[in-house]
Image (cartoon, rainbow, N blue to C red; front, side, top):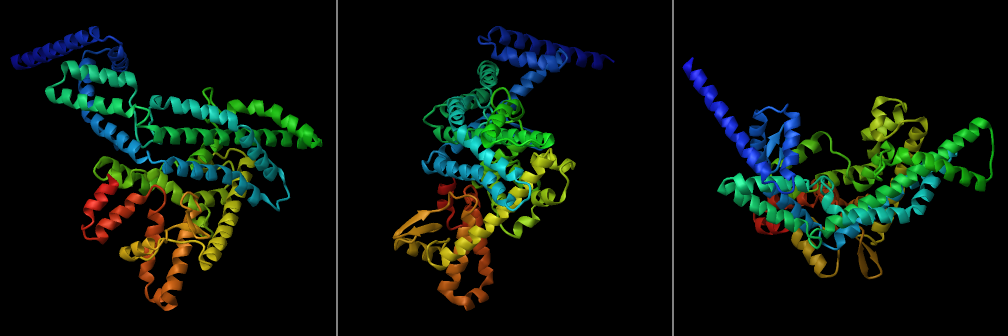
Length: 504
């Protein structure tokens, strides 16, 4: 009818107006940033006029944020404020040092665990390959340092931000967004874009983002070491298998030369052309050492929930790192490690089982290495538990102190320090010793409770065990936010100003 014709005419005129607006916008685009965005939308949209209107709607959604399925896309101001918050939190001088120590321990302890777990085995190939991996790490420190320095300088070009916690838009996309809203946005859009641009430019200043820059460079450094170690390990096993098939025996010097020659053949299998890890086992080991493995199950859903509520995000800003730290501790905890799915899969399944791919296991050699690593971690766990118990009984390590906050603060006024090793009259913190710090603190808490209050008190106050557990878990490097939430409930809201100041 006539009404339908009128509606179609109005829609056509509206689309034509949008097209004309976009044409003018592209003409005024000096650096082609908007043109690049337009070409993308035009290509994927089939060159339809409606695509132009979709692009305009996209620009608004990009500024103000939107939801894409289960993923919450933050608006530009909140995103830049979160980046600034992370830069501030990680700006303390101790943070990069603790991260380097923790990642370094995680990097070195994997081949060490493999060596310990493979001792006594009839086949010495796994033990020798782990030593070869350590040698490869040591010899590649110079190259790893240079790669880390390059990534430090190019941090602002890293679109994923820091460990996936923050995201940084590509510069041409951000400039396109800015040009669009400055010229055609409403007054509110222009104000929002101006604020986002101010925060964006501030976050790019080197003296404001040095914390994440150092920590990213640290991640790159140890990832390179792990990759080089894996490359040397694969080369050693390859040479070993070929000599075994040919029933040949060579001297140690000849073996070293053969491994060095074979190592070149595995570089393309372990690294991409731009120096990134491509080998599945190396990537898994690197994510494990850096505590950046992707979250699964309840932890992933909880992280998404916090991500959708920016006002709660400061309490759980580094969920991925904290959960991975707890998992790493569990892998070294006797008995508890038997209930971890990774441990169960590796110890019970064949190497070609489809589930093994996610652990980077793609051969029988890989499976033997993984099994030895699991056994070695358990042995190390027994050793650290025994050491921690003996040191706690001798008063050489401290835990979290008594549950009562005022009593803890009174102890601290007399020189006592929590979660520390006492060397002479000096307390030295052991919190950087991931994943073994939890062993020390938890056992020290149990011993302190028994020594100070007596066995009867311990028996009558088993409910206090909840405090010991939550204190030790929430004191993991990146889970302190949970302790702040606990403080809120424990004080019935009276500590809200203090908690807010600490969290924000």
